Length: 173
Image (cartoon, rainbow, N blue to C red):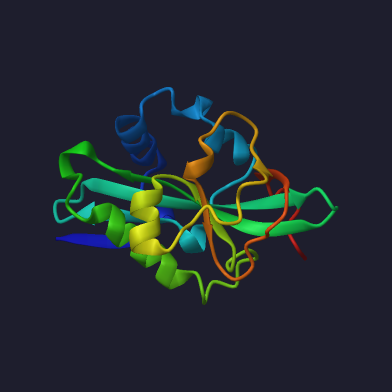
């Protein structure tokens, strides 16, 4: 049995070790990390999965990003991920439970961009279980290489414009 708790209540070194284990120690060179350079995860939407014995089994983080549309409009969005599960417990539903918990928290969070979620991930999985698609992302540019079919979004405010995705460093007052 696992408990889902706010990520901020878990030792940050344990989270970093989990991420290294799940994605490799070179993970910081990936495009997803470049998108969220200089920003912190959104506490209200970031969770950890803790085993009965207190072991960290998984985590999910969400980040404040924005799409700077070529026409000049900046659209606040939330970047979902990484979703990490300790390799010992993969295929046990922990990642799905973390996604479900985050999605439950989104509507009441009051976080700007909550109606425009995006991620880089497997379209077969994130589309089937969580409704993410690449329908509006074809014109988006990222600060590094990526597979266009893996750039996914969901929500009523997902912008359908060409533009550059990056960190949302300016927070609304």
